Structures are given as structure tokens and as C-alpha cells.
Length: 237
Figure 1 (cartoon, one colour):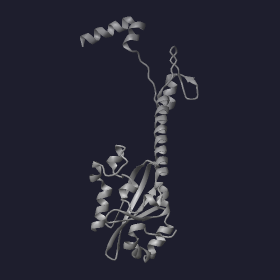
Figure 2 (tube, helix red, strand yellow; figure 1 turned 180 degrees about the vertical axis):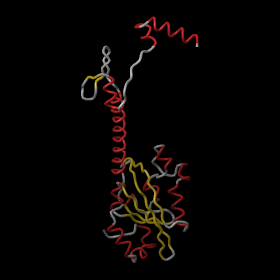
Figure 3 (cartoon, helix red, strand yellow; figure 1 turned 180 degrees about the horizontal axis):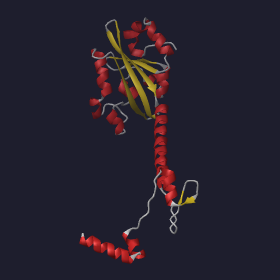
Figure 4 (tube, helix red, strand yellow; figure 1 turned 60 degrees about the vertical axis):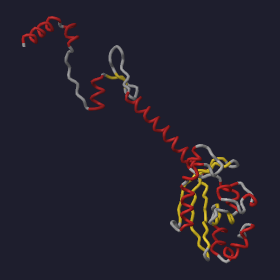
């Protein structure tokens, strides 16, 4: 595309931009939405990818304030669903603060992942990279907006699927820890659907050797005399 500066700023900045071949090359070849703003935060020009991304015509962009063109990028505004810029939250906006530092020379560049809520495009996840341009005493900012919406949606989808898998694994582990036992003979069923004595199962699974004894209740039932004798001996001691 032919790089042209927008309307009323053509006379002021046109010569500077036209003589900078690097900017022509960048705007023509970089597959990102690009625009340049001056110190007043007015858009001087933008490439076709930017106009397509914002779903705007050139007349809606030329000479307008960055916030009016792009919309509100303030994190708090986005959390509250605010689209129009210049709300009370915007005074604390990290994007605005960083742009001011670009023009004062405190920063040469910065990059932020931002969410943009556009009436025409809906919510978009963008990576905004900004670099300072200093040409013959004039200061500009070159902004690149990379659309990460599809990538973020994929990441969110993968995260949701991972949560589902983790939940399924926990359920499988829980089911695996359940040991079916016959209510009558007390045999247990292994994962091959084979019923075997509990002692055999424990020996196979964990190497546990089961020894036999009698609990107090069973001792009273089977051998009441021995149980009474043992109780007497315990009382004496």
C-alpha cells in the first residue's frame, strides 16, 4: 500500500514521513495492525490491517484521538464492561501512562497484553507494542496491535479440557480405590473381575502376609469360657 498521512496533518508531518523509507517498508510488510500518533495522541495514519481489525473506515480514523479510534484499553474499564474511553478509570490506565512516558522520553518502548471491547467486533485480546519515533525534533509513537483473540480462545479451551481431564483422573483414582467385597463370604473382586480370598488379594497386590487371630466379640461368641477366663486374668493384672 502507499503510505499516506491523514488529512490536516499532511502539511505538518508529510515531508518527514515520506522521506523515511524504513516506515514505508514497515507499514507495507509487517502483518500487524500499525498506526502512528503524535504528541496530542491524534492518529496520523494507519495501515489497512489496522482499519480491518478495528472495522473502521479511513474517515473514522483520520485525525481522531487514539482513545476514540481504538476504544478504552483500561483494565478496570474492561472488567466493568465500559467501551467508551475517558472514564474516571482511565486516569489510572497503565497504557495511557506508558504512552505519556514515550513522549517525555522516559520510555523508548513498551508492550502490553490488553483486552479491547469494540461495539463492532466484540471483545478482542490484543498485544500492543509501542515504540518511540523521533524525527527532526518531532515526537511520535508507532503502535502495533497483534490480534491474539483466536490464540487466547484456544488457550482457554485447552485449560478447560485440562480441568475436565484432571477431574476424570481423580474420579478414576477414586473408583480404583474402591474394593468390591462379597457381603457373605468376604471374597474381593479384582480389576480382572476375578473373585478371590482377601488374604490372597492383599498378598498379590502389596505383599502383605495376613496372620489370624480373634477379635473380642468373636472370642465371646465362639469360646465364651476362654473369653471369661481372659477377662478375669486381665482384672487381676
